[in-house]
Length: 135
Image 1 (cartoon, rainbow, N blue to C red):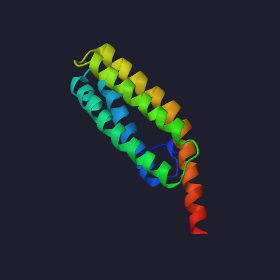
Image 2 (cartoon, rainbow, N blue to C red):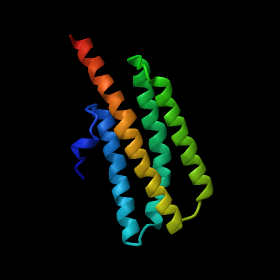
Image 3 (tube, one colour):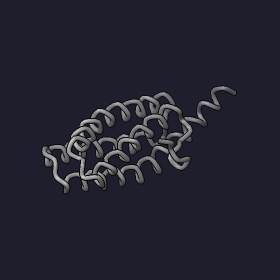
Image 4 (cartoon, rainbow, N blue to C red):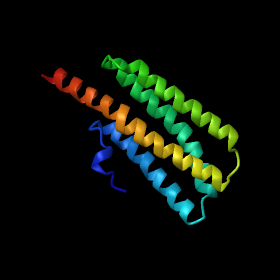
C-alpha cells in the first residue's frame, strides 16, 4: 500500500511506522467488509498495543533530543491513547462486530487527530532542528 502524501511528516521512521498503521487499518476495514474479521480483530488489537508503546517511546525520545516545546502536551496525548486502548482491550476481549466498528472508529479518529495534528507538527520541528544542526 502506498501512503498518500497527506500522511507524510517527512521524518523517515515516523512515516514508515504510520504506513504500517495505515496498512493494518486498511486490512481491518477490508476484513470487516468481507465478514472475515475475527482474526484481523485480535491481531489488530495486539498490534496496536505493541505499536503504540514502541512508536510513542521513539517519538518521545526525539522530543527530548530536540527539546520539543510541545513535548508535555504531546506526551499527554500518548498517555490518553494508551489509556483508551487499555480500556478498549478490557471491554472487548472477544470479537464482536460492534467491537470491530468501535476499533475502526477509534483508529480513524486517532489518525485524524494525532497524525494530522500533533505528529505533523513534531515532524516539522524535527526536520527544522536537523536542518539547523547541519548548517
